[in-house]
Image 1 (cartoon, one colour):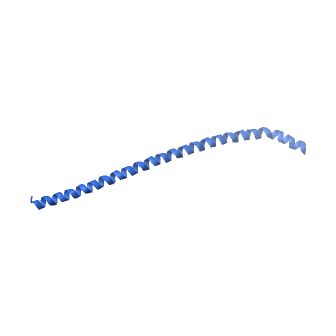
Image 2 (cartoon, one colour):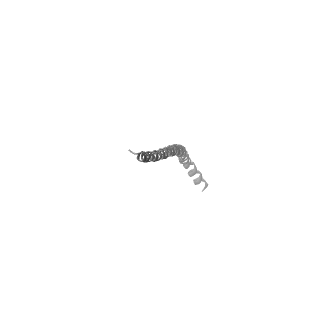
Image 3 (tube, helix red, strand yellow):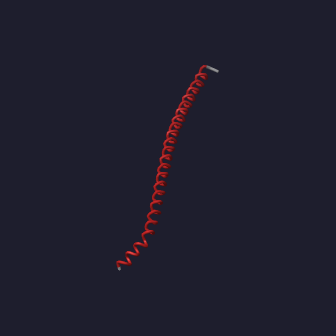
Length: 88
């Protein structure tokens, strides 16, 4: 190989090395971005599960309160009926 051919091959190799370095940098940046997005998504899912669990607990408590109120109203019905009948 002549000196010009070696120089041309070396230049091509340098260009390839630069492009490979750029690709490595791009892949590294994409990987970091993906990891940050995954961490944020995990936090978001965790927050959502906590909110759903809190809502479920509130609904359970409200269900118990409604059941108690329904029972109390049912227990009071005869007394209210008696009072209404006597007042009339």
